[in-house]
Image 1 (cartoon, rainbow, N blue to C red):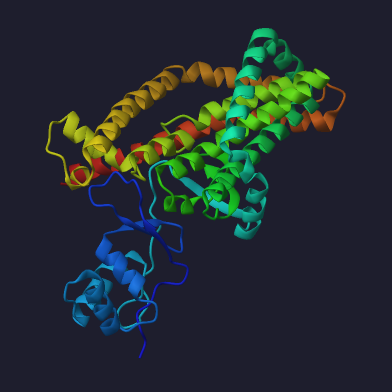
Image 2: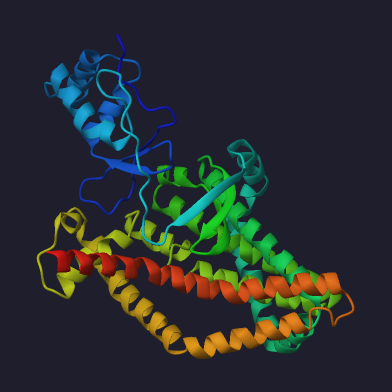
Length: 414
């Protein structure tokens, strides 16, 4: 007889500590990396499977909960609740239906794992000690002092003009920026290991249209709020350490290239702390309130605050304080995104003309430096950096536009 079982690759995470839900959910990670929230009873069913028959699972469930469960009750929960989520086989052992991966709004896509989990574990162990409180306090104090010295005494504009006139300089700055991004991801992994959980794979992918790196820190959900926020901030903290290293090299050499590289790392840190897209700042807000996906509450919050409609079940499931924080986030996010998009759209013709002129100038001057190969490669890199924001804008606007068009067509047919 074939017994029901967990789908291969499914991992039990445990109770979501310090969550913003009235009833703390339990978390299970599907083989595709999706996190599924389960009520306590369903989680107990999942945990009790482990090669047991439906009747044995019912016995264990009755013993743990103090309520009486029969085999048909457990079969119902498996067949109607768990198997459709892709977590278990059906009660007769047959496989669950193919699961479509959720497509969250503004999600990270096209991931390619490069560093396996065991290597990430080893590498993160090399840097986990940097999260000792005394070292963190000293590093942040040194970073603040370095920032004050940098902005008060150094001419960053002159350094930027010098580097942009040198193809080799541009390429070296891009290389240092990539190294900073990799070190940023190492910070997330090291923060997880310091907290006592195992970081997952590291890799690269596409966020909107920008190439990006990632570290799988799903296991940070096993930590409390403080541990999760430490994992969220670990990347920016390692960026600050990277800046300290560049400042030390700049103090020793005086190279303007290092000064421009420091500016590029500052831009990365600022971008990562933005709470409007799925950067580190967004996850910091999410972990502060204990709600994994904030974007799905945009509609309910707007209906409740703007249209004065009663809160739906998603809002009622949240504690009062997280509801207030999420509402404040939504009411900040929507006008900010609309304002940003409005400014970009109003200035889009000028932006296109400026980019076209810059691209034409880069192509025309590609071989003027005396190093035609480096000049061409530098021009290509800068052209890509100029065009990516426009492609990202098109992608961001494309999805809502398609949704509006589909709704309009359905309304017209109706």
